[in-house]
Image (cartoon, rainbow, N blue to C red; front, side, top):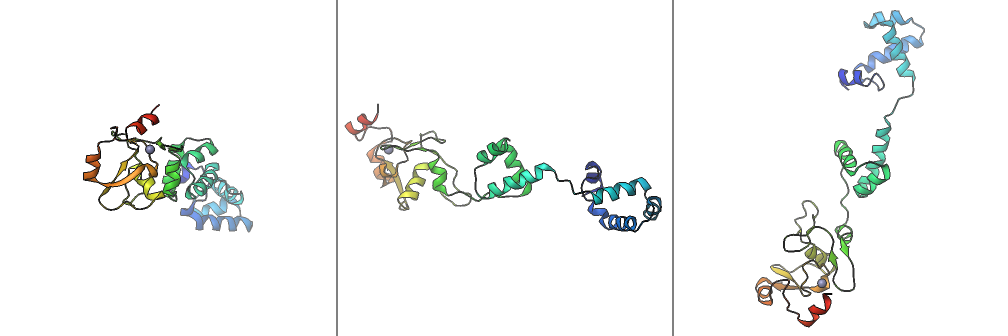
Length: 214
Ligand SMILES: [Zn+2]
């Protein structure tokens, strides 16, 4: 702690810069020396000596936010979503993020499927993506950092529930609903074949497609 920070803390926290001096002062006082005599030895006033002795004998004051931040960090590092932590402590999510960032605490990445599932409206037919979508209507998703995985939601659900997408293949939406992420509505096809089958939103499945749309 710098001298400046120590002054700002009004002496509430231990002063590491003067820890040895403070220890000597406390020992001298405990041995029954007078405040002014001790102060003279260390070049400070008697009242300053009294303040130091009082601080050292008092139980350490802990900023209540430190304890709160520690509890937050515990949850955060377990992968509990920031929003939930914020709600629990009655603060805004950005407060949680800021404190974790300052403390250098990283969240354990949650399983991709858990994060995907939160954004899917499961149904017997199409599973509609309720998260962000791109200009073509496909769901987009922030894949785990450095995983090199796609940000297309439907490709991720396919990979998570069915398996790897063969290299060079695209997933054709058999249901013609770009927003759908139901992997059983997706068919791996070559790019060329996909173009021949028609663009998403077309009516390749004819009557079947009409029934689905209310
Ligand atoms: Zn579908």
